Image (spheres, rainbow, N blue to C red):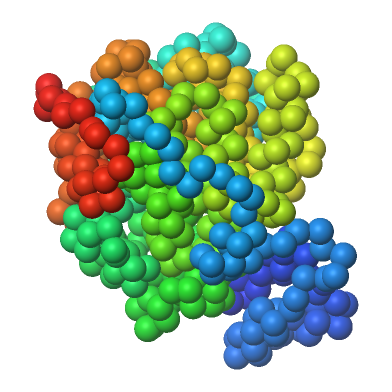
Length: 454
């Protein structure tokens, strides 16, 4: 049974917005025909009109070049290292563990205020005397605003003093799922392989927006990239970006390969900037085994996506604003001014918040995830990605106990066969794949690491 937002009369409205964002003009005559078909609830006509919208091309004045297809994306990217040198003594296991723990902590921090605005979060924390924020979000039943509305925390199981494990969240589900894909199909997996893993291991009712539509398309024998392109107006939203981390974890020092893996996965459900966001952060994470210089990592990430795309523009803007303002809130204001028109769960604006958090975090774990989450929008997603990057840079041994100890090494997921996970076990499995990939393409000697104590 479809939800209201999945029905064609709603989908076509989202598609109009998506086409505008991609630089297309939806003329008045087409808009009138769409309005008439919606008013008459003429579903067949609406599907035909969706096809007409899909055939629109960006105008000649659209300033961006945003190709699909891995070869075309690579042709449009700037120069980059493609593969980075690893130090001989890099502790890959500890770094991967840091990535998993950092992602978990950032997700849990942002989960209670997911989709809240920056102002809402700030007012809530002020009400509970929790600023400056130096721990998880305090629990509360909400608080009065303008005497006629309230804010409500999205579940107490990720609030301060109430965390005993990482509860199930789609931001963590996909990292676990990607691990299953690699274990079952190896690093030569295809987009079709990854899509089959979705169908085999994910419950449909726990999928959202682009992933939910792509899942239906897969069931109806539409393989990637058609599964991403067909009646899917959410194809540039954040879903592929939140799936990116595992591809970086298993490719230490190899950003080009990480971006390729992310591309294979992302094209199940996303196109253009939705794909670029996944490729960018996968590359950043892979390069984080080689350097902790955030600006250098951002440059490496940008070298794996089209130079002249909207996402790259937003990232470069955020870097420039961070150099201009000492206060992250001033940079947030500039991000909001230029990119706040996107959905609260879009790739572009949320990626900018992650970059903001990493830059203003200045290598400090707490400062990084707190700054990112305080920016609002899709706070569990942005917190998870920022936490993953800084966690991998620092390694598990350097992460503050108050942020990572609360999970007691336990993570719940919706992935069939992995509903109850030990984070240390996920780390060991990820590490083994990373070593296998490195050994298959050996160019660096790797120091053997000890098992994680748990």
